[in-house]
Length: 250
Length: 243
Image (tube, rainbow over the protein chains, first blue to last red):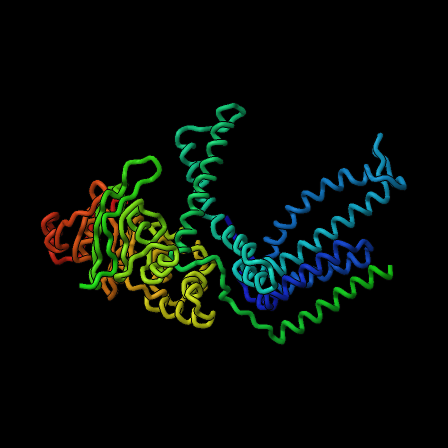
């Protein structure tokens, strides 16, 4: 399993205070999601690309992520123009595509890509550890923060256990098919995975107790707000206001 | 002689099972390094968990540093004085980065983030793990995980250590590093293992666990000579690496 491939770099974006990045990415997503005018949306898309450029990420890896989401959006394009009521644009046999439908599909496409790009540039460039600490500093309850961190830590362990189980059935000649035996085997695998996860959770908790854990989490990381952060925050706010104004005017 | 850990007539059994610990009595004096050997399922890990207060014995007395341990609060005190190295490092290391994991104990002891960070760095350096602080815990090798686990326990400056199968699954190099680290430690410890050779090299006395009790086997050096014959005596060697 690949992880944090975008977080290991040292671009200007990577060096920003994670707290700023989280707040800005959230505000940005909110503004873009609520906008529907094309000038505003296209400007947002341009801002996203600018952020991506600043983060200097591997274009290939970013494209892979985008392809995943746009695959889903392709289905919207197949369905929405033909089913949304409005002015007919063209006909395909018994089906009629509407102008409104096409515009809506275009909006969805631009919005999703803009938000996704911004999150890749801002959030994926932060390590999960830093993200957890930043969320905790921003006031997210400790339990939720540790839920995120522990999930991240143990998802790889669980993945290993899953592969171990899969191998153990594979070497005994198991081949999935549409049969009761297959369903049963998968049910056992999933059940076993849950049992192991809960046993693991118990052991991790015991190990934490042994190191003096008493229910309260303490954060180690300290963040510093630098001049760069201020500059970035100011320009990002201006850009966002620009999008808002464009949305309002047009 | 002052005792760090004293156990008197401890009994323990899992639900509806045979007793795992049967009237067990045992003690760890200050400054001693003991080995505890036994078959799988002989109750070694259970015993460690009872000492740490993770499992509650059905009867018997536990004393740590002369004080009888009964309440949850007592056990919280025990956990400051006795460090426990879990068999599986993935259970012990739960933080995203090495530094955060090593600093977890000191933070729980009420140190400030700055102090905790300083202590963590200091112990990482002591264990020759300088430069590991920002490594992601789940990406470490088995040997590295074990060493970092040891750092997370030692950073709490315990008076004694309990080590549960510290060499299981480790390669030769990691094995030797753990061995030399343990030899340098000037605190008491109990190592649970099924590798006689490892115990012989890191402990002074070896006990074994049989039928829920602890039996004294002998002085580690004579026992070693008695049980194994090494033609190349004096030459660094070990066996039992059957994993």
